[in-house]
Image 1 (cartoon, rainbow, N blue to C red):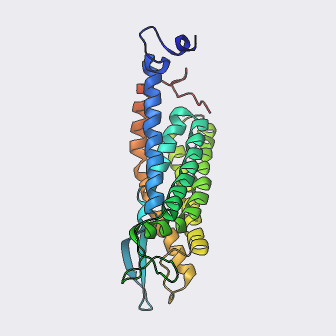
Image 2 (cartoon, helix red, strand yellow):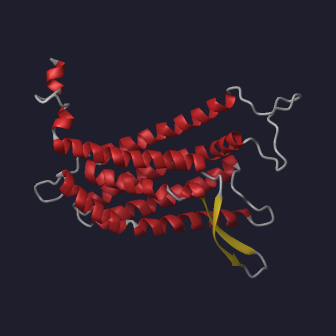
Image 3 (cartoon, rainbow, N blue to C red):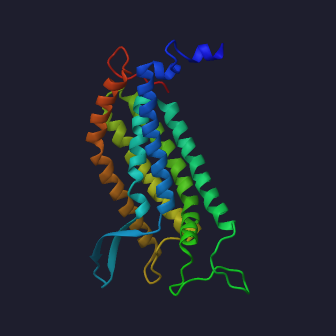
Length: 271
């Protein structure tokens, strides 16, 4: 009985038998996969390396270095994915993807912790049982990555939740306010504000909680933190503006491809 309810006459599953339903599920899977895969990578890469964008000399003979963590590079893609999911599948699905992303963060941390406590072949000090560092004072590669990930993941998870839920909420706030018009406003308005929330939270928590930022002791801490926030946000700001055209094109094409428009020619918000 159950088999007959979920399988069509030609032997296909109900989702596979409906081409439109199958299309929608495939697109949702691709967008969710990009979101979750990117999230996992940026949490592992995190602050393992800082990219120097520019250096400006100051009047006191010092310099201001504009740099972003390598984990920041793919992060704007996560907001683009949630915007696509919000526009095409509704607020509830977007929030679920954000929640699964949180579970993924926990899973990554667990694997790194568990992989570190299992016995391995690394050299240890016979007296203290601590790992032996190399000539540069570094731990074995896995443990260096583990330490950097643990140092930043707390900040990442808090900022992630605040920023992603903020992004989804603001996206639908602007959508409701404009009655489904002005796609550029809800795309940029939600992303730019949520990116500011994310950048500020990550920098402050990473410094004050994890002490993992490359802060120079001979320069004012507040100025360096503000510079990290400004640089990270400026990078995300430019990327967010740059993805407006691809977002417009993508939504226009996907709405036609997935056939999810309502009677007024606009997609029905399922959330």
